[in-house]
Image (cartoon, rainbow, N blue to C red; front, side, top):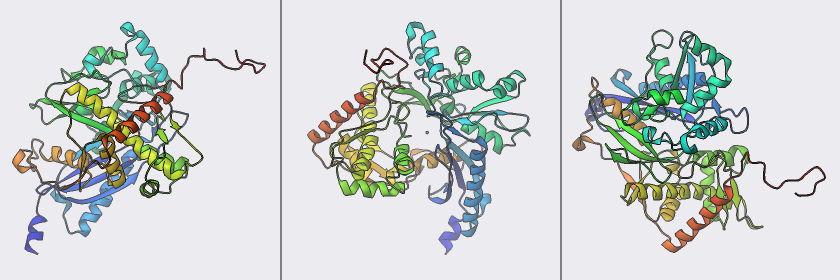
Length: 474
């Protein structure tokens, strides 16, 4: 057809979406925002010790190449020339830390994933050195509390514990970066002239970056994977009094102002489902969890706080651990599946409430995207627990679409217009709350009680009552 032939000439923009659990490469039409082709590869995580989470940087880059090749094969089968791809955007798991040798191009250690807890003692040391032992001591510059989550403390750990890293730093061969930097360096030539760069939104998560001057901070440089909710606060950074992070959302060009956001991280939304699948064998696939949960229709008073590696926003409580409360002899795996989905919704609500308090502008509806949004039951639950409408785009890969749009609008590419009149109309479906507010409130109050039960578990404090050698209690 004539129309199809014309469409085939449209400029295309691609996005590399390198997440904690998988890598994707997606190609969009810059005129219609239509997703033309994509490929996805799962990434292996290793857990060398309890609380440690690592990924192989070589595997990450390999997965990017594989996704690109497969996607391009699919395009060729659709008779679309890959020469129409005018730019590639990158969106990535943030904070995850890679250190590599710029001469050999080889990683000096596995990537330390954002969830990793090995830096807990480093963090305690930094907080104890801070004036007033205040974990928010650097927040006025970085927008972040001192926490295991951010790259600076991971880098500190690598310098203190990995001989190869220390040697490479001494001989000036070490390069440090978040996953975006590592991928871009490899794709632009690696040891043969690769470009070492990042952008403000990744840099603002290292704890080495001053979000006001938008530059690396000399004082901070001495110092040192999930469900994320961001609320765009415009060109002024709003500081949180409720345990949220202030972060750089985007900066669309070198002369454009930076836009900031308040952010809360649920830390492990997808991971809960993975845990039920891989560790517990309760479900065989992520899709099955929806069927199981729907079969129960309720958690039967069971609450699941998946604080596998502590609680993130708004608590910032690294010593918390997971708990399942309210078990009775009636509780079965369907109730557990339901409680796991509910946990994601409760955590989102906690963050939303903190955001509403910080920004003073209450949200009236929640816009969602990403893989978990395919789960219809989860979307309905989210609306019920938030007591507000949840809107999900029919094409759920909006993160990758955003990265592609930003790349297509870049200076010198200019194939994608971001002015309001040119933005694509995205079709979406809306989930409205279906239970009464009282029931929703009482369930949320129960959840908060469960969260208190999860707190202060992994403490170094040995003054708790324990058994002495003859088995009696002190």
